[in-house]
Image 1: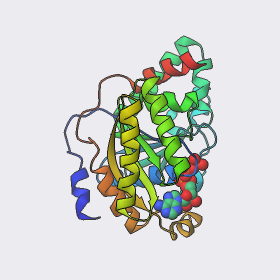
Image 2: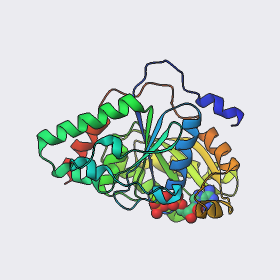
Image 3: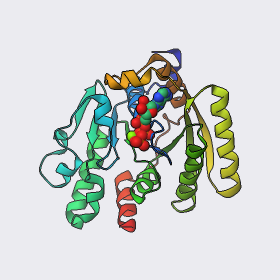
Length: 277
Ligand SMILES: Nc1ncnc2c1ncn2[C@@H]1O[C@H](COP(=O)(O)OP(=O)(O)OP(=O)(O)O)[C@@H](O)[C@H]1O
Ligand SMILES: [Mg+2]
């Protein structure tokens, strides 16, 4: 792994809380699933224990890209059919995956006492086993997505240089900031032709957000368009040295060594899902 990886190194033995990262976009097809998998892999290779959850509520492609078919998902756990351990699929060392199925949405329909118990189990399980939980989310401003992103400690918004993708990234940030009071976002620009192009896209979004919202948008970095990545996805090994290098550099700008806030991600998520149901 490259030099930059050292900046990501987790500090062994240091007491820390599980942090939650959400990867979101206004427009679909910008590379969320690809970036989620690669980010999880990079962090896990830097000795963080990582759990990837497809927050895609039934329509995620994480398992397809990884070539893994999880036999059970969060829905089965919420329905009491299987213990949580059976839902977790190991991917490689320090990296695991949970498919949410329609599990997250189903949460709101459960009786309060059962729900509290399940939330506590999820919380404890994550605290015991993982440093970071990364959610791959569906595109757009559906209330389930905004609930997931606004409950996370680190919201990453992904866009490409396409004008429609930029407009929708701004739309997502605006809703999350003005309606869900998310103060800060990390912007990652994917499929760029050059780092300069990525920087220009970021500047454009930052300026509009400064003018029309209260959001602070921070530049995480850019990932180059790589025509070879499609072949790798077909072969279910969606990794490349170039992508790893660029994404490692971007991830090193995240506050990974700072202890995440003490609120319960799962309780916050539940409150938000309930409010919108
Ligand atoms: N840096 C890149 N270079 C080339 N192709 C890319 C790059 N990033 C993503 N792609 C391609 O873009 C397509 C969409 O990627 P992906 O499925 O990760 O997007 P997504 O945002 O998760 O989509 P959805 O919104 O449908 O969930 C894939 O075909 C993938 O190969
Ligand atoms: Mg996806």
